[in-house]
Image 1 (cartoon, helix red, strand yellow):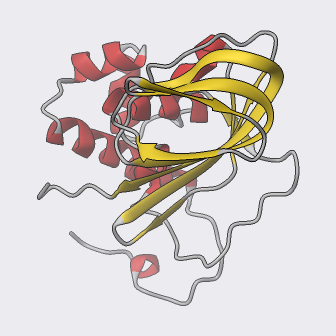
Image 2 (cartoon, one colour; image 1 turned 120 degrees about the vertical axis):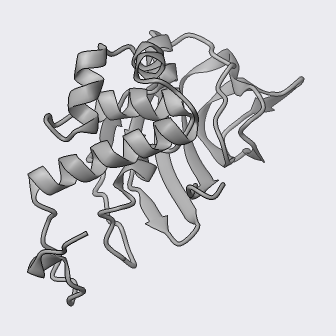
Length: 211
């Protein structure tokens, strides 16, 4: 593949990836992960709640998908959202998110009224990480069927929930933590005291075509 001069390794200036290049890179990564899982475009589109036409435009870099759309595709592929940015990720030693400026995104729990705020993301070597601040309020519903690759750590900040992992249940109060294999069904089965807020950090191994 021919490289542009700007693709040659240079000192990190902190400049953003051009939109067209970013869209193409994200689309190519989605297509690669879909094919690696032997999913047809129709299968992925249906699982993500998209039309095949829209998914085709995303994979070919012809449109700029919203974070909500990318989160739906990531959920359908059972991969971290950050994996789509691995091709353009710059090496950074720190990610700073001021109070209240986490990115609100859609995940499966959003449909049950769970509010997700992405506090940063990192793809470094063989590890992908996504930290979230999750809020449950009077409009939220229990949902304990989350499943995705990797490990997850949660730390209760306020409120009280009965949290399921596999066939076990844990009553979580402020200050309590859980660390678990996130391939087992998990999530808040009972919302005991609202509002409830907890930190969730998801870590997964970066997938390659050789996996």
